[in-house]
Length: 189
Image (cartoon, rainbow, N blue to C red):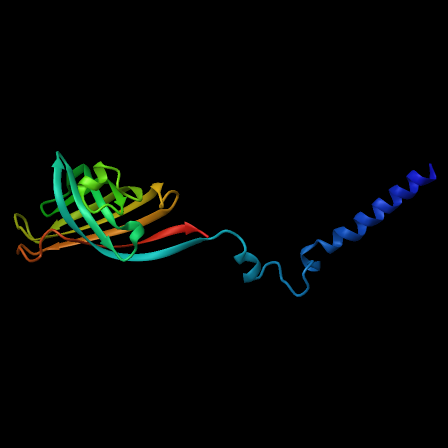
């Protein structure tokens, strides 16, 4: 019986000694403030990576589907993209609201690459934008679209990204149908 009481007292004393040592004020590592930047940096964080690029048309694949090539300074958002319009809504005489979905096949250079599965990853994006004509009936316009997407396959699986596409068409062949893109990829560290 004395042995059991002695063990109980030892256990109680050990717990009483350890609990204060585990508090924030009595860190196990001396001089480490548990709320400082180093301690917080050990936690998982989302790290954004910026990118810019140019998006040029490849082919019209059918009703409301157009393929483009997204060339960016980050290979994770470079490849063939399929754009589908899900809504085209006139707002007034010079403004149209555009909505749609996009798939970007990372690493693909041609539509044939996509068809044959020769790509390293895939993004699925939804987007919304506006097309503003210079004046009613003009052929000059500006389109700005914002998209958000998630990597659904391959090397981009689980990543998230945001895009902004801008096209300024001044009516000349030189301005062409080219979008300039910029955005950021967010990944867990």
